[in-house]
Length: 444
Picture (cartoon, rainbow, N blue to C red):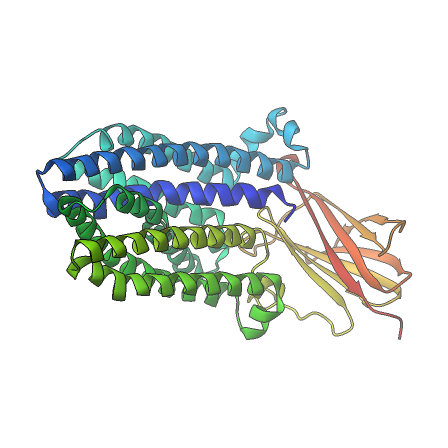
């Protein structure tokens, strides 16, 4: 993975999930456990103070990383849209154009405001030693949910048509919130279990927290399963697309890791949690150690899922790559070479007909993320033959009456994996640059 955007997305997703997960854990698990476990004892108070301090440190660091990585994400998107190097987007009003005139920029501004409001809430949320007001907990939890849920507007869910625009986006929001409530709360759970020792009062806190986290985890896993099925319905389209595309194969890997996490969670709920509840001090201490270990394993597995998700967001969905999206109105000719090129800024369908050695012509169709026609002032088409030293062919495309861009007079000298590049000049001098391999067959 050489694309720096993948790494920036992974850091941002992980940091945002940690912020929201820390808040959800404190509101739904830790604070109730502190009250119900062994309220009023000195040991329980020490455990509560330690956990609050450690989770607060984790959340503050995660929030800072979320803001910094979102800024890096914005710069990379602005560079891709403008065609400028990353350092060049700070001049000429490029950043402001992206912020004010694109959906991504508008979402970035809203999320930055949410992050600032959340930081203001954290001051009171993590300094209140006990008796946090219902309003403080509710507002902080809602802001955390908004911060992680609004990530949906940077994903494929915003490209829906009709009812898909509602249900897919809603499924994405719920999927992200549920992931934060489970995966994002695993590290805080491990911190609490580590702070609790063999003392009976500390074990009482650990028992109460484990029981509440188990219930939260079950609800989160159920939500992840349902919303995951909805997302797959809209983004995959069928078994052939699932197994025959990079997107589909990565999605399979994500599901495998997720099922492994569910298996560990099942062991925790069915065996270790009951042991922690019923065993004597020695048995409870053993169960506590195993729970800490499993929470750490689940957290690492969750990190792997986040990396996969970061990569998936930069790829065309399997249903797009397989050319099955209902927005396509005409079939690709049987003798043509076809490539769908996808990015967060826009998409292009490139058809070379015939897709074999000899004379040919190319058709380029530009789309937005929601499969509406993408208007361009100029489109430059470059075709590079396979192998080292191949001389690229660059032509200006001509727009036809139906809005597609045509390139005539191409000569394909050899078969193999050629490279096609589309460089489109859009409104406000933005650019969309896309490239991908395209397979050219031998001459009949």
